[in-house]
Image (cartoon, rainbow over all chains, first blue to last red):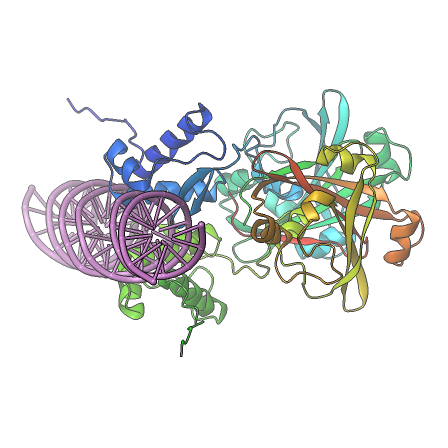
Length: 245
Length: 245
DNA sequence: TCGGACCACTTGATCGGTCAAGCGATTGAG
DNA sequence: CTCAATCGCTTGACCGATCAAGTGGTCCGA
C-alpha cells in the first residue's frame, strides 16, 4: 500500500511572516511598537537569521512594518483593505468575474468603437464580442463594465455564455485557450455619461463619470481584451496604501 | 585636512538587478528568452549566489521576469513606464515635489473647504496652509495640485516658501518635523471643473475633470496633509501593469 | 556640566555552503 | 520500440558566519 502524504508544509520564511502578522493582528505588538530583534526572532522560531530577515522583508514590502537601520523593526498600520494598488480596469481582468454585487447584463457581437479596434489591432468596425456586467452596492448603482473580445479569442470559451465566470477573465483565457497574458495598459478619464450609461447608472444625462479604459496584452504584445469601466459619480472608488515608498 | 567621500556605492544586489535590466532593455535577452542561470550570473558579476538570487527576486517582483523551478528565469514584458501602481494623489506625497513640468503657484493660508477640514480633523473653516502647483507637459496643461496643511504642521518647514521642494513632502515632514507617516487613503471622482480650475487648465467652464482627493496619515492615524489633484481631460493618466497577479 | 570616546545592540549586505525538488535529455533494460 | 531509471542542470529553502554601519546609552576626563 502506498501512502501519499498531501500535507503542505509552507516554507519557514512564510511561516515566520505569518506568525508575526498574527501576533500584530492579535495586538501583541501595537502600532508604533518595536518588534523583537532579528536575533530574538531567530531564537523564538528556531530559524536562521537569513530566514527571519526574509520574513521581515516581506512584512516591510506588504506595509506591515518599518525597518530602521540601527534601531529595529516597528509596526506600522495594520492594512485594513488588502485589495490595494490595483487599477480599476485591471481589476476586471484579474478578479473573479462573479463578485459581490455584480450582475450579468449581456453578451453579444457588435461593431466596436474605434478606440477599441485600435487597441486590439483589428480594422475599424469589426464585429467583436461585447460582454457586459453591472455592479451595484446594496442597490446603489456603482459601475458598468464592458469587455470587448475579438471573436477568435472568445471561441471555445464560456465568454459568450450568459453567466458570470467564477474565475478571472485572465485565468479563463489561460486555461481554456492557453492565451498567456502579462501586461495591462490603462487610461483614466473623466467624461460625460452617454444616454445609455446614464440610464444604467440612474444618473441625469450629461453627469460626469469616471471612465477607465484598459487593455490586456498577451506575451506577443497583441491586445486580447479591452475593458471599459464607467463608474458612477455617486460611488467614488477608494484606495488605501500602507506600503509607501 | 578632512576629506569626506560622497561616493555612493549602491549595494551589489541592486547593481546586479540594474545590470540585468539594462541588458534586457538593450535587447540582449528578448521576450520569452532565458536568462543566464544563477551560477552563470554569480560568475559574471563576481557575487555570491545569495546576492544574485536577491537581484532576480526583485526583477520578478517588478514584473521583468518569471522564475520557473527547475527550468530557469525567463524574460516577461519589458516595462516601459516604471511609475506604475501609484495613486494619483499618493504620488504628490511620495514623489519629489520638483518634477519635470511642475511649476510653483502659491502658498498662503486660507479657510479650507469642509471635506478637507473633516479629513484633517480640524473644525470647519479653520485657516490652513494651501500650497499649490501646476503641472504641464510641453506647454499643455495637465493638472493642478493643491496641498492642505494644518498651520502647526507647516511650522518650521519650508512648506510656506515659494519654491518647490527637491524632496517629497513626506520626506520633508519626516526630516524637518519628525512626523512619521505611513498611510494614504485616496478617493477618485469625476467632477465638473470649477471656474478657477477651468481657467488654470484652459478648459471650458463645466468640463469634466478627474479629481483625486488623498489624505496622508501619521502613525497615530491623524490626518496630516490633504492633496487635491485636478487632472485635465486632455491629459488622461496612463498606467501600466506588468506584474499581474 | 559638557562633550567625546566607547560599547552594546540593532539592521544591512554579502558570502559560500547544504539539501531538496523540478525539468529535460540520455540511456539502458525488457 | 517503450518506458523507467538516471544524470546534469536548474531554482527553492535554509543555515551560520563575517563585516559594515546606524542608534542610543554609559562613562570619564577636561
